[in-house]
Image (tube, rainbow, N blue to C red; front, top):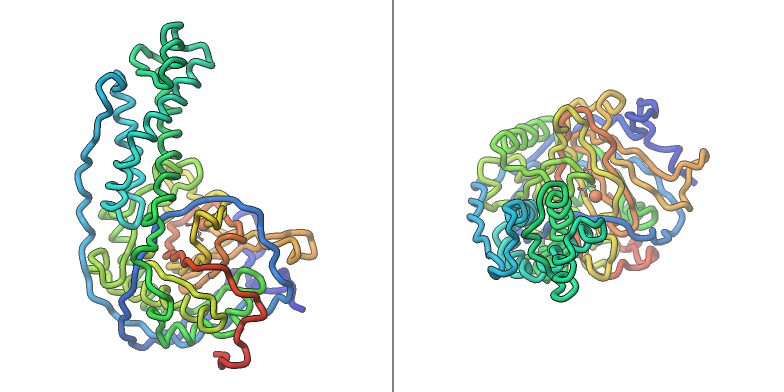
Length: 439
Ligand SMILES: O=C(O)CCC(=O)C(=O)O
Ligand SMILES: [Fe+2]
């Protein structure tokens, strides 16, 4: 039986910046393929206890299949609508301009980092008053608990559950603004996640509608088996060198044009910049190579469904992430689950396609560290695998069971990420090995 520590070591030594799974095979030649229009989804999140995965690990590294690059038609990014700030009733209006600015900042940040900024903004504004009242009450309570409230303000807080915070000055005002901002962002995020459209389900399409011959060659039965058995599979050579280069250049230009945004309210957790691209959509205008990569990535779930019968839905939009560091600091995304609670979060699979050229994990860091189930521990007790973000590498894992992080990253790291939703996963035994030819 192949153990996790026996595979994918590549040529790179493990180190704190290094990654075990390093060298990628040479990219295969490319051909053209037609575009298949499909549908959308949004953002990211955190932890849940890992589900036990059945044992038999298969070989971890899979060799590539022949890719097929299709250039796609372009479009422009949608204009960000101006923020119609809804002011709370006058008697509740915080005197501090800081609070108003914080409110604006939170809504802007949340809306601009979701796949559908304007729909998200409208939904955010509808939840805002209720969330704001709660967040202000919490901020007031924190300040009061620290004895930074006057007796009159505490009385008002107890009597009304809200507080104007009008008299706060200096450190107490700053504290209240920080508490408010964090609480408001969390509450808004929760409210949005409970909102049916948040996860992009409304526009998602059944996976088979995204199918493509190229993905069928890229994701053979043995890869799907490995995904179901181990929760994670890595496939190299999804893009040719030319495709990779073109897609990377397009992302670089998007980043230069400030079309990618930091996920402001999560700055302690991650410091990447993200945007969304919809194959054939407006954002795809002028980025044909990226659009082709999006098409390929969106076709991957159809292969999983084909071999397992697991009914999956594919969002219209794919996230583009650039980890470029800020203020001389390395970039990172701290340890998290993409789906912490499957009852409220429909994400089931995370599929990532890396767009990096000449990545040296020893020098550049930036590995995806995937924490594998204890049943798959390495001989040295290690229960994670470091996967270098090598260009053309496709990594698919189960969103609810594979906790992961992006290790500190010292070079500009680009990736496309797709979150696939679906119902309960079928039993591993359901993988249709006998009826489908392995690729
Ligand atoms: O880019 C990666 O390797 C992983 C990023 C990630 O964990 C996320 O966006 O949720
Ligand atoms: Fe993630």
